[in-house]
View 1 (cartoon, helix red, strand yellow):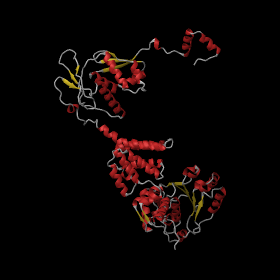
View 2 (view 1 turned 180 degrees about the horizontal axis):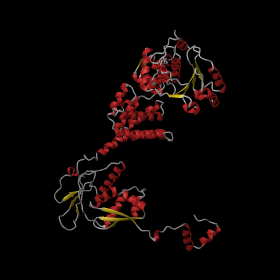
View 3 (view 1 turned 135 degrees about the vertical axis):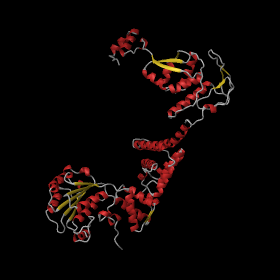
Length: 579
């Protein structure tokens, strides 16, 4: 039985062409070999498992090859190539700086630099994890790195470029390796699976590539693990089960609940995730990624950003067609704020559940706002025809009571006399109707819904200042008692100026601003209750009188002493302070 070799070693690239995901970098190295423009020191830096050490070995083998190919690859036939392939070459030396990071280790390396190569033109030193060298070792290495013998070439490799001294960086040609894309990783895993005669679903390979986070070594290690677990048949289900990953199906079901406003289903899906042993923050992070993937499916330009398998991609396209852009934007914002506030929350589960409830209600708010769009039938089409000389008072919601109020307006030149017919006991009073109207308007303002009516029934009923005060107090009763504006309105009753204009005097600019902010609900309320569509309000600040003078603590003490002189003795006896 042959000795088993893990895929990361068995399928390690031996030529520049077989290096995955670093095409621009390998082409640069090949051109340097073909034009014989080699630097004396190279620095390969990048994430783990992307091919830094592999490219260093291929580069070292290629520059010592006696008969390189026209593409700059090693021939694998000359003595130097065969010695390298059989791991008996003395021209290529590797040093692990993680365990050989002292000054003595660098001195030993410098002594070996003096020995010329036995075969080939160059003696190549590959120093892996070079950032682990001590500052003293770096300083001991500086002179040799800057001016090595003609036959010496250094290749340094590191995953943490920022830990290397600037004096070392300035002496090297720096090559930054990038993370391997998911598509390139999947393609290479598919090649390995075919070579090993292993069945593997594309969705399963995509999940493995995502889990590897751009590192081919990690991807091949996970591939071997999945192959052993599944017995040579790698499926999507076996991968997510073994790697303890959340299935895409959870998020598709959750999005369906969002679209239908089904809060119970959304909460039960989240509960199933928690019972599966997954962390809530991992779930909310996955939800943000799912919403992002739905968003990129909305446009052909961003569609390549979707990095999933073919079958999963079809599900994304189908579901994204049913999701509006605005819904996805708002849902992404909610999930992102939940993710940011997760660590500081005392009740983490409740935080996630509240976020799910908010997303479920997004589509309902959109539907309710459509009820008040410009396509809503006009009031003329809603209100039935009334006998001549009568008008129907209709609340802004467009609904007509079973037994409406009929207002008779005689035709005359003088001020009209209003006669209101009595209704049945079940009829709603004008005050209740106005209160209902203001409640609707306030709710619509909170939800950013603009109510637009195509026509407004003109009314010009006269009213007295006493009736205005009564309507004013009725409006105050519709405001929550804890609102600051309540006290202001109670102590600032309006003064009637003419038939429809009135003035309200307040104490300061803040009260004036608060009252003006209520115009959108206050004026329609008064118009409906008083039957006059021309009502106008002016808000002004009253002049401060002497009675409103603000007294200091000393003024208050003097006043108390004038009323009771014994307070002065008490003040001196206890040595009190004024505050």
